[in-house]
Image (cartoon, rainbow, N blue to C red; front, side, top):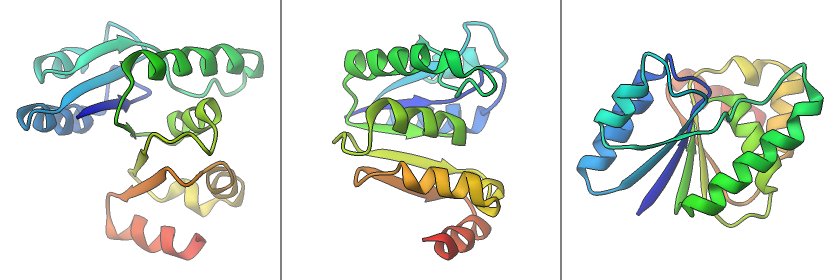
Length: 153
């Protein structure tokens, strides 16, 4: 199995790198898209056995002209890696992924919802749900997230 992780940071999300390391121990081929080769957690991903790709996956908010290039880079990464599943750890990476692949792309995609904040705002909640397709799934990281997620579906 091949999994592609998307994260918006090379400085944080150590918990995501730890999850990936556990997958590697189980025999999963793990790839990760990081925005930079320099950051506090880059080495943690590499030490855990993930294949690191330097591809920014954070939605370029406030720079709409940069969105087409970001979409193109993400599509190229997905085509190159050919993952069996894509695991996204942040809302803006998830939004960019869904825009890049469209709602009918067949690769399963999971969004690990770290917190319920975006679900509390009608715009972000509506945006996220409106661009999701049959291959999109959610992982609630807490009971609070699960309760919020159930209330918006």
